[in-house]
Length: 261
Ligand SMILES: C[S@@+](CC[C@H](N)C(=O)[O-])C[C@H]1O[C@@H](n2cnc3c(N)ncnc32)[C@H](O)[C@@H]1O
Image (cartoon, rainbow, N blue to C red; front, side):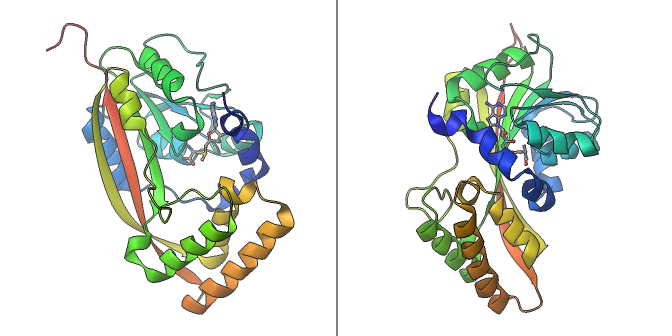
């Protein structure tokens, strides 16, 4: 496994507090699209949420009636999840799930699949969902095509952060989970959900600090960068509340029932 993947949970553990405090939730329409594309009603479904982190996706699934088992390799991220949910939470590697074959209806990766091994992770998910189950990944991202201030913010981040990953990079695209699912024999469907986030400026900056490309920078450099963003964004939003155009990309792979046409 390459170094970026092997150490990702340590990067997130360093910013678990910021992650928990300020990362966005996922909109209702995302969960509806998940039900539609997977053919699985969340109420009553058994869901394994891999890379559950501090529990943003886990709580969204629990709120809709799913029975969720959260899985993450980051001890501090999971500790935050445990504070606010009492679902089972396993400190484990998503590439090697400690779960029996057919244990779940759905395996989800919210904002996390790109940190796992692309082939091993999907093979594990397919094993764990069994016949008729589904595997889903989704990613929240800002939508700089809809606001000049956001495009300018992302360009500044791309120029200042060596590890920046995001929509203003030439050739940027969502992680290739659809291809990995297709290679694993799943029937794949994709969609995008647009939404708008209203967020205080300080929370937006805390959210930025929790992104791996800032979390992996030296502390003083990150603080300086965020001070610059506070000044730039404060000029655009003098009342201190941002309206941020967002998009969620959702990909779902369904595993057919053995013998079904
Ligand atoms: C960006 S966070 C996503 C958290 C959450 N699902 C959400 O929606 O906010 C990615 C998480 O994946 C976890 N992770 C990275 N590699 C992993 C692996 N091999 N197995 C399990 N979790 C992993 C990290 O520790 C981190 O908590």
